Image (cartoon, rainbow, N blue to C red; front, side, top):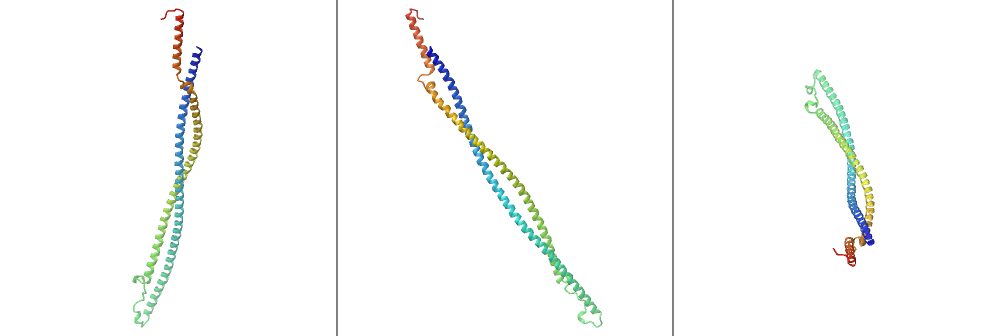
Length: 263
């Protein structure tokens, strides 16, 4: 009976230890699989974020280069337009002065011719007042007036072109500023996320290492339980049934010796 009690007690202990160990092994196995999946996900996230930051940084650098180039071109164009406008205005002023001189000359010449014609016995050559090469005859004055008009048009066109170019440049600079601010913010966000994910990955790897050790310990303990609780030649139930049969057989033999009738 004492042996039966011991075996029953041992069986109860084995059942409890095996159940606890099975629960531990399942729990740790699930945790290991979950941690490995989370680490894989974090690894992919860090790689993608790092790639995104590199691409955004490249785009910001290209944007800075485009802004610098556009600014240089705008400064050169503005300087050229400014000079062109100044030259056109100066040319108009010079032509206007020349026209004033010529018109004054032609006026005085015309008056002189008229005066001579008023004198008795005026030479035949002065039969008509002297007109010179006036605008009406397409002479020098007319040519200068065309030139003056050309310079005026050049001034107007250049000023218009300058306004258009400056407007386009200002719009480009505004758009570039907004674009750069957006990309810079994305870089900051993704860089911070990369740092967070990297730190989380380190923590997960440490957790995985600890959990794997706990799983290994549970597996080792299961191996130690096997000889006495699992892999014994005969199961606890079989040994109990055999022992019951032996006791019944002994009790039957005892009754025979006592002369008792068998059932």
